[in-house]
Length: 152
Image 1 (tube, one colour):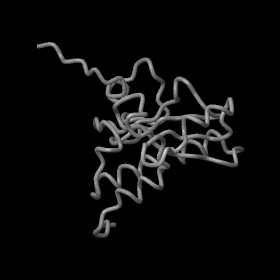
Image 2 (tube, rainbow, N blue to C red):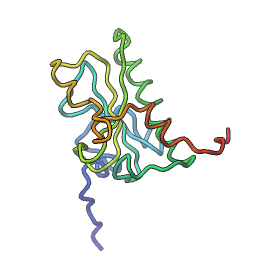
Image 3 (cartoon, rainbow, N blue to C red):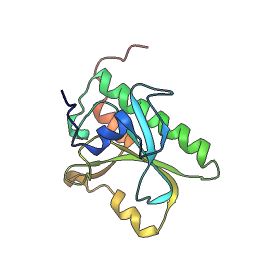
């Protein structure tokens, strides 16, 4: 029987990336997330961290330990990669687009070593308050932090 091909480009990258070079991968380091360079970078360094499991958007995350731990892990992977690849940068930024402003319906963390290049690209990564836009990773963590303590 033929294997069904996922229509989600990020699921394809996470499961069998032959065309996208991975900076952090399931095969070598991790069974939860993979990382790769954004194909249209907006900053000095611009990486995407995606979960292997298909989660459509930030709206699908809930106040539960699994989601909080996943997003924390995504941030840690992004910080590690940027510190390794852009140690000279003095500002890093991490966040997610919120619907309807997300370009791919698969949760992905944008990791930037600033500055934005060109500068106007920073407009794509602004919060639009109640309309959505871009949410900083730490703000998302506050929003999904479980009400009960997270076990060590």
